[in-house]
Image (cartoon, rainbow, N blue to C red):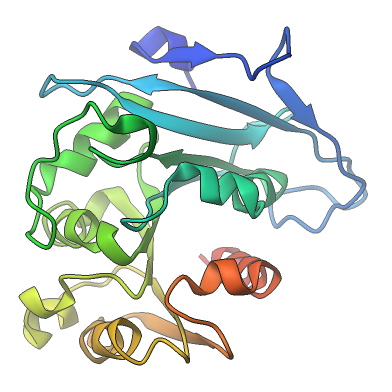
Length: 248
């Protein structure tokens, strides 16, 4: 894999560090790690320019420091959130410890990508090529896409138009699920893990009613959790995601 700096991505060292930050762990439960090994994680952040031009998107990245990543994961976010949430609850680190290259972007107009112009209005479907450009710019290749809430307007068109680039799909009560038919969903063979909180009686249940038509899916209902269920119980969230990834 080429270094990010070789593809026009500006790499930024985390504050107070002379090298990319590394987090050591004594655990070795990751599905891509050898038993008994120590998993060191390299954290970086920067901006990635897209082929369509405009302001670049901010990203945070976590990857194994001592081995080549076996799987790529792209993390999106909801309208009130950003890539910082995935860092704060440990999802980036957890995925990297499991042998993944995990990249969380700030969507256009949000987080640290406020200068970037969104390709569609909130609630409308964005062009499927948008996330295709993101994957190409980051050299992620086919990736697992984690898509909560607002980001459904980006991930769903990408899934339907560029399914070969989606290794697996993990929707978390995304919007825009009603813009596709049951027949369209049933034509998608991509493995999917549908996650939602049982207290999310609006978006969670609406999205499930549509997403359950995906041909190859599993459902995880997080008890006592709301719309951003991953924030309510990060441990349960991480367990569900890692178990799903183990079986890809």
